[in-house]
Image (cartoon, rainbow, N blue to C red):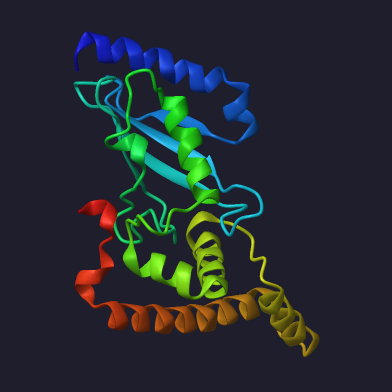
Length: 213
């Protein structure tokens, strides 16, 4: 990696570690490569969103031309969001593409990604199936996103209906842990059926959002 890129990313790495803002927002970054060519980020799901309580891992690759070109970032943790591929973790965010500026930093990127979780742009999606559900059935979108947050990012289950079902079965004498696992499987099967219907409606070619075109 060019010396200018190494010096810049070293400084930005320390900036994230020392930043009160990133600490307050539960944003972390770690080295993967000692040459600073690859980092691992982590952001917390924002409050009052389906992602609240989840921890999302990011792959961050620094190009030779940094900071004149943006880092390459994708979600390692699976997430249900219109601007993030539910399959590959690819991200549709303007500052990671044509709106990048050399004055932007690693801290800017991480905070922007966290903000994206709270403010989706369904009209410029990375994942067309998710965006379609977001616009056509917002409540189902929230339930699905919340479920994925629980299954993949470790967020607590926050659905009142889900909790009521668990409590009702426990009152009948069933073990809480095994009951939760069974109910989760039932819920997963239901969500997968919904997603299959979405794929069937849009067709396989419709699963890629306009952000990729």
